[in-house]
Length: 378
Ligand code: ADP
Image (cartoon, rainbow, N blue to C red; front, side):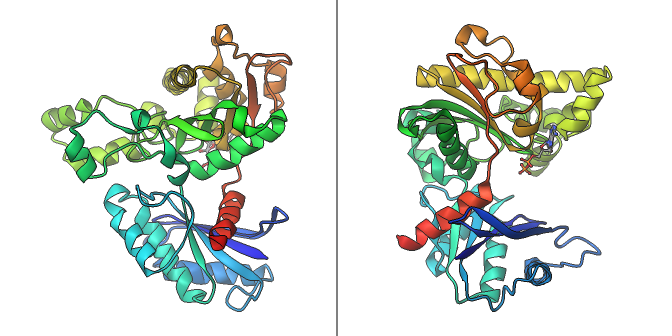
């Protein structure tokens, strides 16, 4: 049994062919620059043809393979309707399309990817796996913005939360590492990649998460501001003449680490900070301080804490960010063993700590593959 996992963005398609039962990766790759001038992939249809060619080079005939059980598509926004992975039919595709206003930067690529893959394999089930689904049970007090209630309901304005596939995988793995049932654990998971978010997870269920209506809210990210006073947008409109589209581009693509210091890759920012570059030092300070504030907030939200878990590109690889983010929290029982941290061990808190601090690699593709199979049984 194999599952093809497809993650289609507006200009990229990432894919992995997996054997979910064995947890094995058979092949994988990437098509970039879709639709850009001079690209070999003018649209998602051409990009999926390239996926098929790449898989053929790896010895897998995507168009004819009989062992292909299903194709799982990562979809960023599932709105209020999609609370779990869902087999795609015309109605589901229309519903994902209806959600485009909530995720104009993310859902269109996913939709184009579904259509292009269905053209290649109309005979196998296609499943949509939503980044928002994990958070669907967020308590109303965490999901609700203090806006006029009727307006918010009418336009579905609420906190949705993202990176749910990663949270599902990482929280389950963290429980395995700790050797305790997930049901009894209070954990804060820090998903720090290009996009970054935090989640408070109690007994495997979401209590709160830092991304909101869109993936813009919360932590400082590579190019996204995370939390700012919403009045910044109105102020920029008045003093600099920015229209809403320009303000959106500013906050999503030109802010975060990139805006603070001119680089969005934590490796480069760290290198510059090590050389004493003041912009890079401040950028890392702002980035880590924001994480620390969320850790404190989520400890308060849950009232207790068993583990802080780092994951994704930055969380898995940057000992410096991990140490700087949690520095000064010893009074809350959160301590890092610096030697273990530098060695990127799984457990980076000293033995006997009140709160375990873990580094757990995420595997969104394998989680999507497993949820894809689970959706077929529903
Ligand atoms: P995405 O959000 O695109 O899935 P990842 O989770 O792969 O991204 O994270 C990518 C980011 O991880 C990079 O932009 C980079 O900042 C960071 N990163 C990767 N490796 C390292 C490293 N060794 N040290 C610090 N940061 C790293």
